[in-house]
Length: 441
Image (cartoon, rainbow, N blue to C red):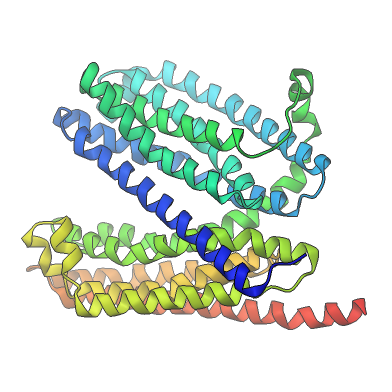
């Protein structure tokens, strides 16, 4: 029996609210780690932040895994479907560990060079980072199953624990052992490890014997898995790319003494996307299930309205009180970036709406849209690379806020184009739906 519309909306809001709280608390506790990590020696703290960025780079290939397993879990109806997911998870785990063993071998062979390049106290730090990277690569699989099965309570706790356990472990190690880079990375590993174990143990998938586990690698349909993985990774990655690539371009062409002000305003503007993320995470499996069972749902419309409401609130606050977040987080020198904030929030609003439409298309398997989205990313990069050097010349004598506003205008127009492309493909997909329905009758 389907839920009544009112009950469904109430459930959606409850789940989205919990996911938003969990995401926010997870982010806050992850950031709070730096309150203690900054007490490391200066050279080690720099290496600590570098290792965390290295971890982020390691996890890029796993961007699509969460979406892949969210789709599989949402479509799954039988125990055999669950067993197939377990086999695929084990197969991917074996493959990741096998590849990582090569990485550990490289670390051992080139340990002296790596210690010098990364300015590390010992090669153990890099080994801990790589082992944390293994777990970070596998974590999206576990998240995806929880998301697809709509076990948002446990998904939220797993996401929250990633930062909370990291913070608690680091505090304990620093207090009872010593303040060091090695202990810092052990804490990061502990956060990933705990979140992974919690997510796997609450996913509700069947257990498998050792012999069957070892044979899983042969039984995985790698071609089919890759066929799903590539478009889902590109689609999800396109949104992330549109959100973040401007910082790389600005860092490349603008005065490095000024880009911090731009980055501060950008962080506040991009917060809108992070607020929308948990809502989209709740929407995604509901749309997959609706599409699989051929049952109509208004969850897309409701999510769009909810996202549009958040955008209106964020833009209004950005216009009326743009300086407040800068005053809370940064010192007075950053207030010169205040005029950028309403522009940045406005530039991110189309991308927030586009994220909803893109996830709707991916949830319904309309993968041809990915090519248009990737093409828009490519055009955006060319546009930014063309105009950025010219705008950077206007900042050689000092912080020219108008030049940076012009950069944000390019971002806004590009995000608007991205929304337009997502909207066109959404229209084309919806236009094809009545034809399919008519054929069935």
